[in-house]
Length: 345
Length: 240
Ligand SMILES: Nc1ncnc2c1ncn2[C@@H]1O[C@H](COP(=O)(O)OP(=O)(O)O)[C@@H](O)[C@H]1O
Ligand SMILES: [Mg+2]
View (cartoon, chains in turn red, orange):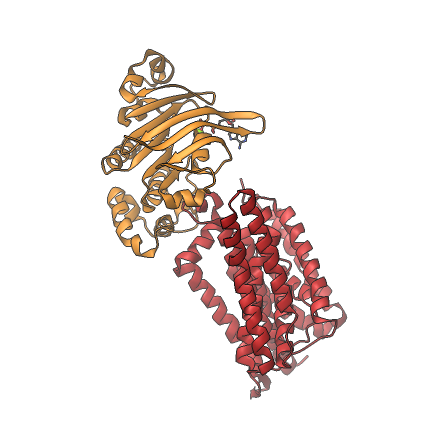
């Protein structure tokens, strides 16, 4: 291996690491607020990526129907809960509150996609499609279990992942797609070719991480999310609705998924089921980082990206195995040194 | 005068254990009502049920409104705040952030004025406003829990054993602050094992035993009642 190859692998590792960092941060965020280990985070990425690819060719992405189905399910559950309280007016209001935005978004997508208005518009439409899926998914799959154990929530999470993957096959087909890069062109720094897209990956990741730090450090709503994670009962006692915290956390995770998709879809071909492997690497990073701390998760994600890049050079057949196996020594070390138990009392 | 808080036949169960049995009580506007009782009498469960944190049977009426279908978070917005026995602070956040979150339902604009008021009541909190809540001393944690509750500008402040684990001098300061709050118009429901100290500042009192409210009356009368004196005041020998 010479310096050029090493630099190339490092570049590759950093790009992958940046994507994993986004996924890991989304997982840490969702886990902290809701105790859900969000296996379907990868689906947000693939669904956003495949939607972008579809819109690029002027065809309406299947995600539109998924959005409507999720909205209808959330509306039915909210209305059902209100009817059990015998307040039909509230049932109607909640159903409308769930359905109206989804229908408006679907209408906008159906109307605008065939016009092929360009990448910028497509990204906005894609975000409008995918981001609300987060809160809907929370409402449908996790809110009814809000007081359940981490294990039960994990099982629900695996169930949601399997259901979404199956829907993905129906909605997007088995074929893989890649989008055109947001930033085209490349240039040379010393011996290294750097593509515009890879600079965008690193830049956008850093910007998003900085934005999250500001959100949690400076805004009252960000602090409220953090408070729900630190002490659920304390959060309720100051009037923070924990359901709302859950919905916001899931919306943020879905938004991070959209950003990841915009960054990664031009670099790798995405299939309906690619989300699992992508998400799993973010998961490995989040676990190595301890599922609790953002900077640790980001550092671990970079390490995972680099490990993947170098193992694909030395032992490409085993690169996934090596990445996933790296979690074992960390878990072992953690279980030996861990002193504190579950966060709940 | 109609009561600000009216609790009727409230019961709480943990499985088959009945922790609160058909308790009825009222807190009048601008008064301190106290519930005294031994460890395990059901005081904490009673407050949690009034706050909406625990499922319960019976009636809770606040300012004329039945709270049966109102979740805890909305009760906060209506003007009820609880300072829980466990304090439930946000341990890894600063004192200032804990206080700011106390005003979550009031909005950003109200924070500076409320902060000024809380810092005037508890100057220690201002000195330590950057410190993490988890690193405060017991007395400071109690002040922060009270300050956080006051940030919501409650009309009814419920305190669960504010004297628990604190030195007598700090207990005196904290109860002094509670009477000041009453004088400003905040109605207070104070739960205490420290019966002597609680009855001294309260207007009305209830005695809770094994989940039931067994005695009630003006605080002075309760303090003079030989049964209360024997069970709850006798051992204290002029403490606090
Ligand atoms: N989470 C719980 N599960 C089961 N029993 C409980 C629980 N919390 C309290 N209890 C029981 O309910 C009774 C009343 O407890 P509590 O309300 O904490 O009383 P107090 O605050 O007066 O000490 C006690 O017998 C206690 O053991
Ligand atoms: Mg108690």
